[in-house]
Structure formats: structure tokens, C-alpha cells
Image 1 (tube, helix red, strand yellow):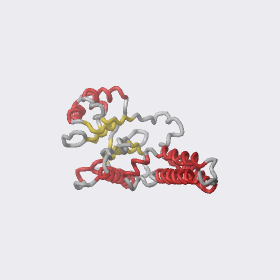
Image 2 (cartoon, rainbow, N blue to C red):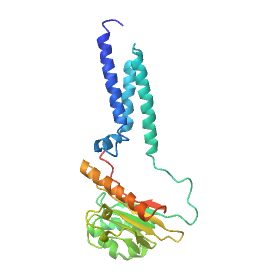
Image 3 (cartoon, rainbow, N blue to C red):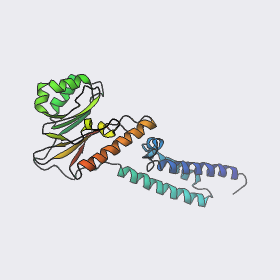
Image 4 (cartoon, rainbow, N blue to C red):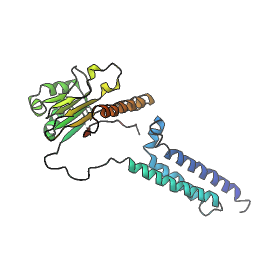
Length: 259
């Protein structure tokens, strides 16, 4: 190595190290996402973190920097493996085969505020869906009132877990089969996060199953992010306590982080 190349190589070393460290820290945002709002934001783009060690490897390839090359290659391999593993773990599992005859249940989950749906649009959606169980979030007071009195809706979904008061942008479950509410919100003290969930047992003729409806607010701030995590923890605890081991259908608008 000549004296004229040393400054350039030093720059390459500094840039490669900085990129490698940045990539590793970004990749670590995935396991840290449950404890840090910023990490939760960054974890959504964790695949991009692979670019950093790739560029670092490109900077040192062909240079007389054997130790650094080895370190960068090891970091690249570990990071690609970790990111690939985390992305695979994040995929939702799918059923192994088609449902058995006679056990098919059609469900609909909809945020009726999206797109400014009118009461007529909400009723049209439900009327044409062929659904057996419906979970609605952010239902306007006008749509809620129509659902309460519309003859067709009362015939299709005679069993309901709806608020006993008139609210705007609330949550409700409609069912063609009898339901048993498992969380009785009027019995809970104010501030209890379980008041924001709906957990019911649907008495299907082929066997009961449980439906959970939960809708945390958009976690656009650290405080709202923590509030949403507390709500999900409360929902999980309620299922474990009130319906352990029962078939569970989650119909939710989970409002991920802004990224």
C-alpha cells in the first residue's frame, strides 16, 4: 500500500464501519420493537437495512483490508439471515387445508369510517356479503341507529353485542347465531382497557367459537403506541382467562405504526 492510498483507504474503512454498524442497529429494531416506539417505526422497513452491509462490502472488496473484509462479510451474512428469519416469523399462518363440509363460517370485518361510508353503504355491504358474523369499527351514530332498526339487518343478524348507549365511532359484533358476551363492560371500572374490546362466544351448531374485536387508536405518538400495546395485552389476557383453548377468530383493525 502506498502512502497516497492510505487516506482513501481510511475513508473507506470509516464509511464501511459506519454502514455496518448502522445496518446492525437497524436490524436490531425488530426484537426491540415491543419496547421502543422509534424501533417499532424502523422495524417496518428492516429489509432496507440489508443495503448497508452490502454497500460496506462493496467498499472494501479488492482492498488490502482482509480483517475488515471478513468482518463485513460476517455481518452481512448474519444480518441477511436474521432479517430473513424475522420476516418469515412475521407472516400469518394459513390453514393447512380446506374447511370441512358444514363448518364454513363467513366473517366480515370493516372500518366503516374508511372512505366516509354512509349508513346506506354500510347496510349494502352487509346485505351483499353473505356474512355469518360481522365486526364493525368506527360506526357512526347514524349507521348504528340504522343497524338497530333495519328489518333486513335484524333478520340477518338477530344476535348482537352493541353498546347500550348512543356513541359515534364505536365497535359492535353482529351474528346470525346466539352469542354470549364474555367481557361485560358496564361491570368494569373506568380506565380498564378491557372496556375497549368485545369478546363473545358464538354458539354455532357445530360447536362454539370465540370472536375478539379490538381496535387500538393509530399509534402516531409514543403515548398512543403504549396505550395500544396495553390494549392488546389486555385483550390477550382476557382471551386466556375467559376462553382458554377455545377456537378463536380475531376481527380487528390493529392500526400499525405510521410507517
